Each structure stands twice: as C-alpha cells, then as structure tokens.
Image (cartoon, rainbow, N blue to C red; front, side, top):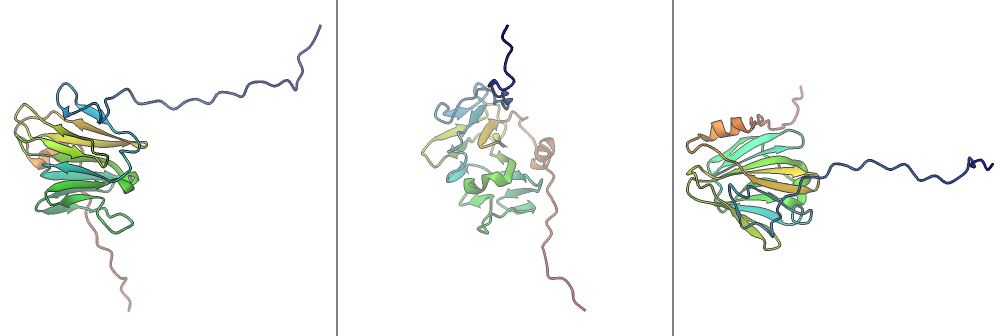
Length: 188
C-alpha cells in the first residue's frame, strides 16, 4: 500500500472572488436614460479620463469619500467645496454645464445632478459618447452618480413633479457640511 507523501503538491487554496456588479447597460448601448433604461455603467476608462460634462443641470450636490458634502447652483455654493490637488473644483459649474473632473474621481463617493422640468440633462464623455436623461412625468430630471470601485454608475431617479431643491437633497441624504475657512493661528 502506498501512502501519500506529505510533500505532495496540493493545489493552492482558492481565493474568494469579490462580488461583481449586476449587468448594466454601457454608455455605448444607451442613448436616453428613462423609465425603461434608468441606469448606465461607465467602464473604468470612461470613469477616469477627461471630464464628465452634464448639460442642463441647475443644481449639483456631492459627497466625498471623507463625507464632505456641498451643493452648487447658479447662485453659488452651500456647504464645503472640494478642490483637487491642482486647486481646481472637483465638481462645479462652467458656462452652464456641470463638470466633474474625472482625473480625481477617487475623491468622490456620490453626486446628484438636478435639471429643469421639461428639459433633458445631457451627459458627455471624453471619448465622444453621450446620452440624455429625460423624465416624461413632468418632474425635473435628476441623475444620481455613484462610484463603485473604478466605475461610475449614473441613474435617472423618479421623483414627484413639484419638489423643492432642499427637500430633494434631504430625500437623498445630502446635508451640506459647514464650510470652515482655515486661518493662521493667533499669536500673543
């Protein structure tokens, strides 16, 4: 009778795989986010290069990985603005468009883009892909952005037609972080 050798090569233990996200349409497959196709998932390259430009947005809200939140409208910013290492805003308005600097997307946890009732939001990516987000119920289109690992997901959120911005932000859990300006310490 042959006994197994103690030094026999055994297969390495398998490492558990991380859960994969459920299948979702890509930016190449979607032209309009609507009730039938409310979600699009960007690939890692689209999620990290250039800028994500959202046309038609009237307000944006953000939350960073450090749970710093803020809201920007055409009238200004409420909460704490987030600047990148290049001293530029991570998310802000430029010429009527909301722009997310994807080079520093690792700083953001989630965001919200709010449009005007009856007008779609348009999303443009650096590689020429684009799609719109339209709400057929008469409500302003609202697109939520969530960073999951190295990918961004954008989802059209169904909302009632008449909802004030402050109520909308509360429903999504955005409470602007008080902005504190750092200053030189006092010396006596």
